[in-house]
Amino acid sequence: NLANNNLEGPIPGNISFCVNLNS
Image 1 (cartoon, helix red, strand yellow):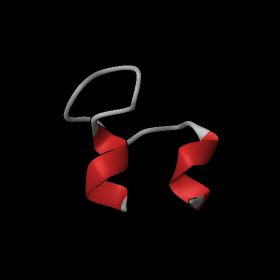
Image 2: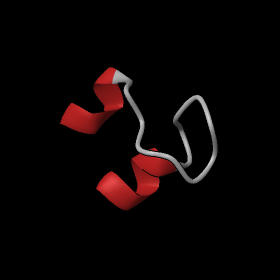
Image 3: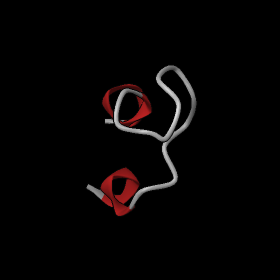
């Protein structure tokens, strides 16, 4: 899921800081 969440972050390719990390 972490890899998928990277695409959902503020900058594509970076680790997402969104709550999506918990999913």
